[in-house]
Length: 177
Image 1 (cartoon, rainbow, N blue to C red):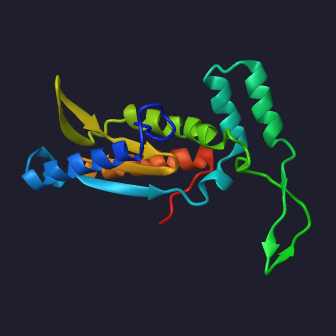
Image 2 (image 1 turned 180 degrees about the vertical axis):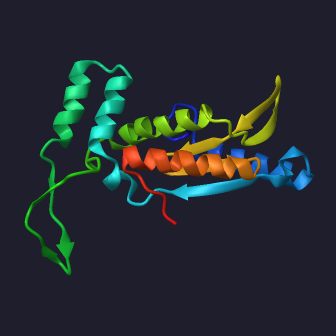
């Protein structure tokens, strides 16, 4: 579930999910073995692979005009680094998405949707939460680049580890240890 930059959603939605999972754990219900991993992607916006991002944009079916605009924004991007107050020479960027673009957060979330899909399609159970029509399985919740994974048991940990490894390999995003 993406809660960042989605109409009607906020960081509070992600926090509410965590609080519900904690309450179930405290009540000793089926969530007694549940664990929540709060993930932090290392240099998230700077390490996202541009080729991966462009492939995701294309696969999502965006119009060619938009896809070409995103590609043009990232083609030939350069940057300058300050070290002890001294600017480096201009360096070409080989990965990452431009932080100066108003599209940055939305493009990052679009790329993360691949991770959401991989987790949704996995056998991981996540944490069972009561719902009006039975129950739902909370597996992942995200706010911008802050991601929470919910594990119902040890098998989920192994599944998530494999998914994160595959996702990291293609997207360029690494989880801080």
